[in-house]
Image (spheres, rainbow, N blue to C red):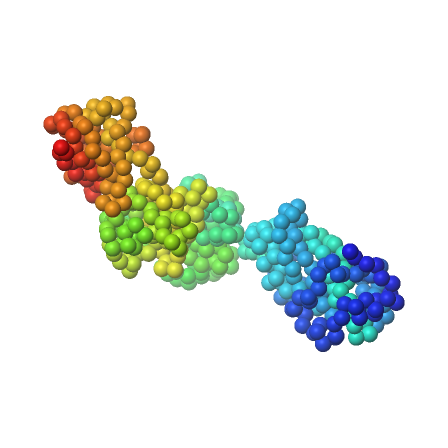
Length: 481
């Protein structure tokens, strides 16, 4: 319980709390007192100084004032801190230590406080705060409750818009054309993930710039200075950028069109860019726990050389993966040298997100099971569709075209298997009791929406179906006694 002491008894309280002045020289060190031990001094309180904007602030920021005139004569503040909870959140508490007796705190500590509770977006954030001070009098220390206050902070962050648009390049230089060429972005807040990408076809010489909606609206009004241009040479594929009004000209970006496609990545936090030439391989490969990290080929196929791949595999968990199937994608079979694609961000559904081509990126994680994976290396995204079952459909099996006869996945053979009595008639394979994913064609080359298959002779058959990817999927059908 907090005690209210008279000024005369302050020294006695200090003796009881016991600490010599040498213990209070380090302002960055929190003292070993509990809030329950704090005393109060009439009139000694902390007051907020209004909204504190950390953008452009110095390394030391004054956030509160103390009514030090209420202290006994000769008393000094030897340490100051406050405990903060996000106002209205009611969860979590963080303690910040002052760097001076007159209410200055480290800007970096305040920035971290705002980010930890609310994220990096530079809008006003409020904290319910409680200040405590170590007060020295006659060489003795007392731990004093300086009261509650509301701390209002605006975290430091660059100016980042929610959307950016390419102008020129594969389109034209009109504002209307620019509004159809929107950069892609993850599902995260733009201040948490400041990277935007735009991918377009190559094949011709092109010049382009980019800007947010304010810049594109300015173009429509005849003002081109708000667009972004490179601070280096127009042909540079990496570098920094700035608004044209800060440059000595338009500084548009230039590509020669020699690549099939191009991906422009802009980082709005540090104002840097990368233009990557994209010439896609026919296959990429899944590498994970299920195939000894790529030792067994698990290809995904790109049909149109556009960087969009699809394939099927089982996501298997490991002891260290916390019950999740773990895998990545590689640009070449059993090699990490031609692309090492791991997770960038994961969407709320847990089945899609962005990819990073970086050996240090994390594994893609998913609930163990069989999946169709769609990977877009042009946009650096992935999507997983759970395959809960695969079966035969059609009059060759008992259920006709209405009901499937299910197969069972065998992780040892990597096949969906079953022994089924079949009539001499037509059938197909399909997934999830629906037609969104189905296979037909020929037994040695099963493709999406392919023609019906046919059993020539009625009988009992052991069926193994290997859904791998287009051009690689096949089945083995063996008569069974």
